[in-house]
Length: 398
Image (cartoon, rainbow, N blue to C red; front, side):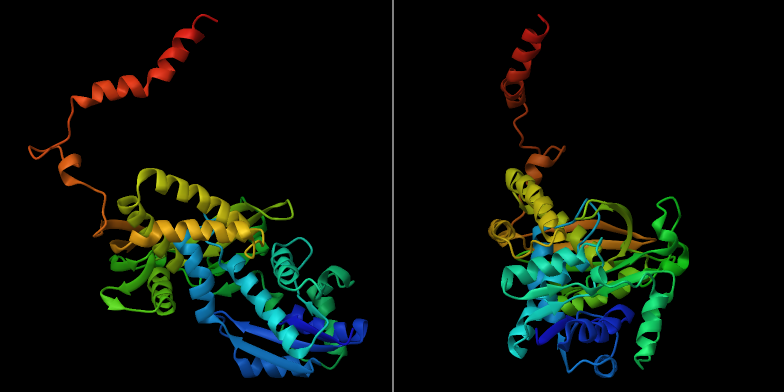
């Protein structure tokens, strides 16, 4: 093995991996970093990687690609894992994996490496992406191999190699952040009985610190994609950035859940996704107005399966693509506007309208304008309930 491309975050783990790979695999290490909305500077990251011993450093601004090709498709399906998680980290990993393979091809590397642990989800997501896109590339996971038992041991190792790094992960919490959301774990959060302390909040304000006046927003969708905010045309990237700030200010988008990881364990996770929460609820409101009943019910069933596939690292799978195709077809008439009220941690839909609305006022009203044929209900109920009527009659004889 002569060259390895490392998915480099700039933190202690991946910085430690660079000299460890060189020492244990006798190979050049190429550091690859993807910008998905994190705040660290490209020059700082590049210097850190090269100082650690990387032979090359690649940095790609993938924010627009992430939103347009991963986040928006998932939003349009309505994907949410176990009723709460909007898949921010899960959606980022296949994109990073794809770019990792591209850099490996560009640099003629033999292998790729990542800094994921042996009981996390991300190792699965990275490795399935790489093996699907190029199964000739070897995947190395140093954290599953090395003997370090603590961050202190890692820090001591890099220091012995003459590498200076501030251990930002030495605090209470482990964070993973991108434009679509933030995952927060470790520390007190590992006990599901503990209330998340205020210092665990990142971009979402605690409810008792939010404004006493609500914010109101108007979101316009076309083909199930958000296109305008308060009448102003925006890219999805700009809208998500704006809604993250506004929603976070009003305490919207904080999720505290116990979820089922891919490897079979339950894990307490805290997430922040202000923009995702707002857009998801708005789009659901538009779906309820526009989609035919069976179409909507089946799309929501498929959305659950789609979310599971993404969570489990199967973005590059034929089933995920097939579900995407079904939803793309049903979303063609998901056009309209949704009004929302953001207040004290809540994002509440207050109105919705669409040129393709299936809501018929003359059928829904209870006024003198009512055109519903009430007399038809008796026969409908008799036929609708006939199977249960027969079953009830027979079952009484048992």
